[in-house]
Image 1 (cartoon, one colour):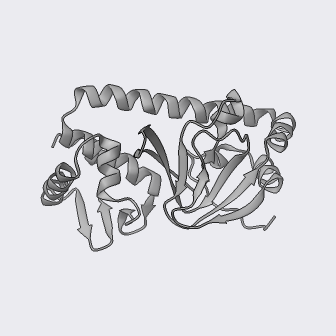
Image 2 (tube, one colour):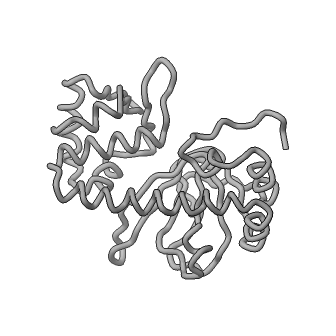
Length: 227
């Protein structure tokens, strides 16, 4: 392993591990690069391996009906993928696709089991990852029942900005791989509504629309926006 340790976001799975555990886990996997649009994990697949994102952005996509997919979440460097199938033994419940070029480590299920036996505290990190994602999904459902469409979009954009993380001196830069259609899917609104709300948010100085990016000035302010 190289001496320079990547700085993972604190909220991420890799960011929650002690350094020795992180290094052992990365050594347990084999590196793979996924092209933009390539499937990382497939819905309904019976595989049990896990994937550690090292760089790039991935979209978690659900299929409610044949031919229709909706974006459920975004994942970035430091995040763990495939933990539910590993824990439950059930087929994968969603498809994960590379939104950009993605560099990752693919960890076989048996290697991950040995890793957890050698690093018991890592099991807590896995449990916290699952709990956080379930809680986020429940909060999202509760919020969406109470919030207006503009407020849902503002909250969703704040969450997306947190996934990207801040760029020093600029703000939270959301790249072109996260489209207005993706934001509409995440917020359960139409693309037209997203377009209207983004114009309003820009007029209020909360976001800046650029040719190939959307800059969020402050996610906390967005969460306070009511549209």
